Amino acid sequence: MQLVGWSAMFVGFGFVGRATLVDGHTLSLVWPAAGIAALWVMSGWGRTTLANLTALAVCTFAVNSATGATYALSTAFVVANLLQPTIFVAIARRLLPDVRGLGGRRSLSQVRSSAGSGSPRGWRVWSPRWSARRWSG
Image 1 (cartoon, rainbow, N blue to C red):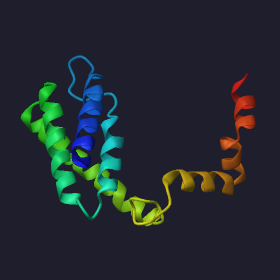
Image 2: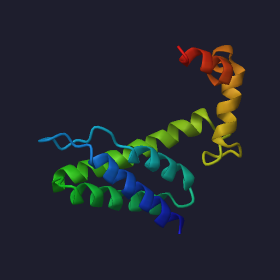
Image 3: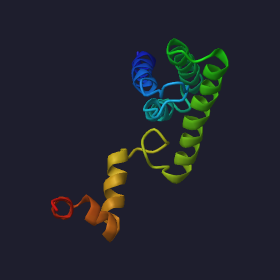
């Protein structure tokens, strides 16, 4: 069931990204499905990696083919969409080993809040009072 959910989100965001094609070009301006792919691969790392990567490849090819990309271009997008989240997870596992999905038990929001409060500059960014003064003009 989790595989179906991730697939549906990736396909949905993939169509959103492909809707940003510039006339006469084949590359999208943005690819929001990349973030979904990173979370998808991270969520099943180790247990269901092969199934997740296979489904990701099928979804990537389907979205790009359905939106007018050639066979060769769709295949290139599959390679890119498999490499990017895999490299992201490999690097994130080394840099954030205590985050859930990367081998640890802490949520990403806990890591973000501890990092934000751990440095004076980060604290200012996360402080609502400073943020309101900063952007109010």
